[in-house]
Length: 272
Image 1 (spheres, rainbow, N blue to C red):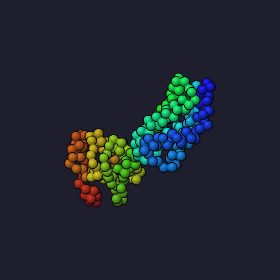
Image 2 (cartoon, rainbow, N blue to C red):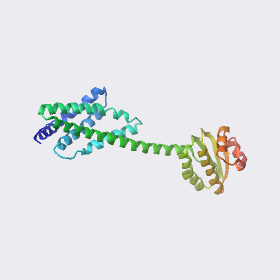
Image 3 (tube, rainbow, N blue to C red):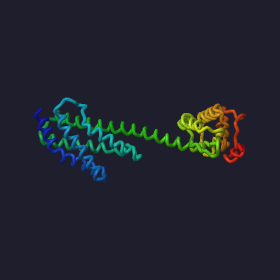
Image 4 (tube, rainbow, N blue to C red):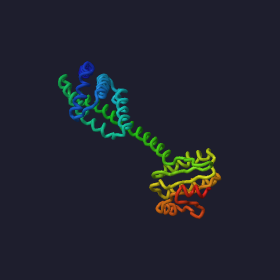
């Protein structure tokens, strides 16, 4: 215990200088040039990590990690996710960081005369903390990426099916881009109710901005038209190119009751 006590006291008395040494060594090995604020943030985090590490050597909690390390890991993940960068840009820093810590702590162990067993315990403890930090970074990045992806899908869904009033009682529903399952479901759950709230008589569903659709999406679109019909609205389809029409046919949609025109202009003229 006296060896660990000496080691703990050494670490805690030299926290600032050791933290700066770790950060500088990692940046040098990776040939990185980061902003001053980011370097200061890393040094502050390692200050708390090393102080916590020094204390942890005197207790039995192998899985304990400082809250600062967890928060720092999450912030790193958030920075990558919000900037649209890959998590690999952070992950690649862990091996050199691990090497720097292992070499630094080995030098201190030799200086203080720790046994091989004691040194092995110390290396295991710091590696455990770094492993937990890496896991927290991954988990936070994955969660944030999923959240951003969902928000992006929602925004794209809104843009892909805007409701465009053109005349009293007439709206155009232009379908834009690639209509996938998510966007088709969004139209069913959000766009159709809004059309009902407006209180229109005619809905022109324009396919001219559609890139591709599959048979499952075509079935969704058939259901959308059926719902509009059941709500008492007159539905007209426009811009249905041959390749899209073929997909609609393959989906089993009945063309016998489909009122279709080449353009929105023609559809408006037919209503007049």
